[in-house]
Structure formats: structure tokens, C-alpha cells
Length: 138
Image 1 (cartoon, rainbow, N blue to C red):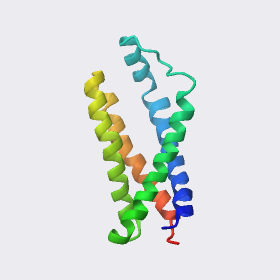
Image 2 (image 1 turned 180 degrees about the vertical axis):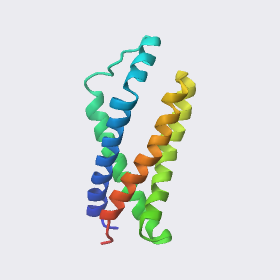
Image 3 (image 1 turned 90 degrees about the horizontal axis):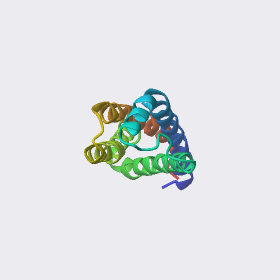
């Protein structure tokens, strides 16, 4: 496995994911999230530490996505189809699991659960394909 390329591709995938997360949370869902937070007496702003942690972890998720692609590549072959499989695995573990669990615990409305799930499948697919495009075996 070419770990340098895993990191490089993962950072590119992480960039795609971070842009997607910004568009989803700061543009598309911002007002709905602020309204939901107010209804539940929660702060609309999660605080100054949130953004750097979220951005950093999203880059880590990009690296994990490309690492997963590199792991399954010998069995499924190189290319976008394998990148999509890696993306779907990541999407399920992140968006589906967390969306359902947190949606139930926090009683979130459907638009704060469903739209992110749909958005996430596109976001992770694009990120995985971009990162996999840069990955080459050692």
C-alpha cells in the first residue's frame, strides 16, 4: 500500500467532504438548524472549538475513505466502481447510523435527517472518486 498516496488522496477527498459539509450545514440547513436549536433551548453556535475539530475530523474521514479504497482495491479492482463501494461503506457508517440514532435521540425533523443522508451519499461518492483518482500502488 502506498501510504503517501493514501494521505494525498485522503486530503483531496477531505477537501471535497469539507466543502460539501460547509454547503450543507452553513448554506442549505443553517436556518433550519438554528430554528431547531432555539426550539430546544440549545445554543445556535456550538462554540469556537467546534469548527477546527469538525474540519480536522472531516479530513481524517477523507484519509480513511482512501485507505478503505486502497484496502478493497486488490479484490474489486482499481477505479470509480471500487471508490463508490468505499464511499457507500463510509456513508453508511457516518450518515445512516448517526442520522438514525441522533435523529431518534434528539427528535430531529425529517429535513435535518433525510436531506443530509441524500447529500452525504453524493458528497462521499465525489470525495472517494477524487481521492481514489490520486491513489496509485507503491
